[in-house]
Image (cartoon, rainbow, N blue to C red; front, top):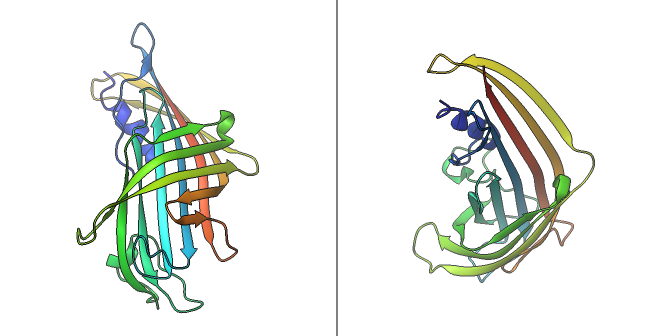
Amino acid sequence: MFKNLRRIATVAALGVTPVIVSTSAADAGGASENYYVKRADTTWVDRGPVTALFAGNVHRGVISTADDVSTPGFDYLDGRIEAWSCPSGATVPQLYSHGEPEAPATECLYRGARELSFRGAKVTYAKNLTSAHITGTATAQDVTGVRPSVRLPVNITLTAVGRADTDVSLDRFVDEDGTKVTHRSTMVMRTATVSGSVGPILLGDEPSDVTESGLSSQQDLFRRS
């Protein structure tokens, strides 16, 4: 009955991240399903050499995690670090954009990237999305396969600042079986700061570093009538 409702909830919650598939909390009669996803995302621009990873004097990265509370463990946790050589005052382009036309063109030279994969990493969320802690080890694999992979210890904390923004929406539709469904979605979003390290990269430790982080959750309740 609800085989497509999970996709609706997940796409709304995660945007471009991979689809999460799981069982859900449902009432005894199967008339409703409830999904709850928590997220922590951080991006950074760190200036200075990181010779242990690759060349360049500017390194831009991202780590994203999504936890589907309906299932044990974490459904999505990955990241990426790009290296650039930039003259003084130049700004690196958007993350992942080195393969796309830049407007205006960047003065920075792309030097390579590593994809981060996590195995056995631990992500913990504090109550009310006040903070999230990511700890463990990431394997940093060169995207070209030329450089050998390296293992990086990861220990970062996202701490919420300011008040949470909450958005509630209500939608009614008829599913493919002709059943009327009411969908109530509640999103909570919080801006956050980040501290800690990814291997030799210290996050937010210098005035020239730029970080952007956020904590969020989405609860989707589908009720059949």
